[in-house]
Image (cartoon, rainbow over the protein chains, first blue to last red):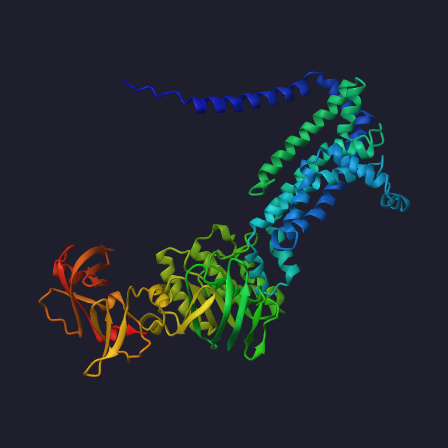
Length: 265
Length: 349
C-alpha cells in the first residue's frame, strides 16, 4: 500500500496567500478594463483631453528621465567607486526622496520655487516651475531620481574596478576606461533604471499636484487627468487614463525584468 | 630593471609595508604568500592604479612612481581574467592597440598572430562567456602580451584552472617567457605551481617582503619559521646549536641531538627538515646517514601517489615516502620504524 504523505501545511498556507494576492490584483485590473464599455473607452482615448494628457505625460516623463540620467549616473559612479568624507550621509540623503511622501516633496518644491529668492530669480530668467509643465518635470525628477541612482549604484558596484585597472594598463585614461569598459558593461542596469524611472515619472501624481497644480489642458498629465475626471464623474475619461497607465506599468515591469538582472532597487 | 624602493601603501584591508625589490630584465620573478599578504596590491601599485603612500618605483633608472598606467608599458593578467564581456575575443585582444598608431589591417594581423601563438585563433569571434577557463586565461594573456610590455604581471593566473589545464598553461608560460623575453612577475599562493618557472622568488606576508631568493633557496634554506612552514618544511625544531668535538655542527632540541651540515652560529635556534628528505627503514636496518631515530608510526596518509607518515619519537616527524618503499616495509600504524636523514637535509638558522 502506498504511504500517504502528511500534508505540508506551511507550504499550502503560504502558497494560498500568494495566490489570493495575485487573484486580487488580476481582479482589480480586469475590473478597471471591463467595467465601462470598451468601445466608449476606445473612443475616449482619442478625445482631445486624453490626447493632451498622453502628450504632456510623455514629454514631461522623458524630460525628467533624461534629467535623472544626467544627474544620477555620475553620482552613482562616485558612490560606487570612491570613498569620501560624508559618503554614508550622502547615500542616506539621496535615498530619502524614496521614503518621503510625494506630497511632502511637492510642498518642499513649492516653497523652494514659490517662496524663496532663488525661486524668484529662476522665474526672472524665465524658469517658472510653479503651476507649469516645467514644475511637473522637476517634481517627477525629484521623486524618481533615487530609482535611477540606486539601480546604477548597485550596477556599478557589481562591476569589479579591476576591469578599469586592466583597461588603464592597456592604454586608457580614466575617461576612456569609463566610456569603453564600465559604461558598456553597465548597459543592462542603465536600461532597467531608465525604464523604471520613466514609468514612475509617467505615474507621478502627488509632488506634481502640489507644484504644478491640476489645471485641465495645462498641467494635465495622465494621473492628473484620472484624478480630475474621477472627481467630476467623467468615468470613461478617467478609466481611459487608468488603462493607459496600467499598460505602461506592465510593459515597463516586463522590460525591467529582462534587463534588471543583478540590479537592485 | 624594475626597482621598487621602500614602497608602502595602506588600503585598509590590504597593505604594503616598506617593500624593496629589484627585478632584472627578462627575469621570471615569482611572489608567493598567503591570502591577504599584499601580493595583488603590490602588482596594482606597479601597474599604476594605486600610488604608493611612500617609496618610489623606478624602471631602467626612470622614476615612474607617478606615471599613469597607460604610460608604463606594464600590463596585467588577473586570476579571474577580467575579459570585457561586451567585446569579442578579438576585440578584447585588440583593446590596447587602439592607442597605438596602427591601421585596421595591421591590428587584425597582430591579433591573429598572437592568437595563433596561444592557440585561440579559432575563437576570435566568440564572446568571453562562451569560453572555458583556460581559453579565457589565454585570451587575457594575449590581450596583455600583444602590447609587447616591458613587464607582464600575472596575478594567480593558474589558480582558477583545473589540474590538466593548469599544467598545460604552465608549460605555455615558460614558452611565452622564452619567446617574448618579457620580464614576468607572477604571484601565487602555491609554491609548487611555479617552482620550475621561477628564476627568483619573494615570499610575502602581512604586506612585507620576508625572503627573496632562488626557488631552491626558498625551499631548502628558509630564513624564518614562516617561510619554512609556508613552503612545506613541516619538521621545524626549536633548540640550540653548538660544535661537537669533531668540529661538526650539532643541534639539540627536546632531547634529540641531530647533525647539520650548516655552519653553526650562536644565534641559531631553529632547524628545519623537509618531509621528503627523510627516509624510513626497519629498526635494525643500516641507514647511511648521520641522523637516525627510532620511533612509532602515528598516522599514515596515502594520497595514491606517495605516502605521508607521522612518526613519533621524542617529537613528531612528518615524512613523505614513495609507494614502493612503503609497501616493501609493510608499515602499519603503531609499527616501530627507523627514520634517517643526512646532515645536509638539516637547515639551521
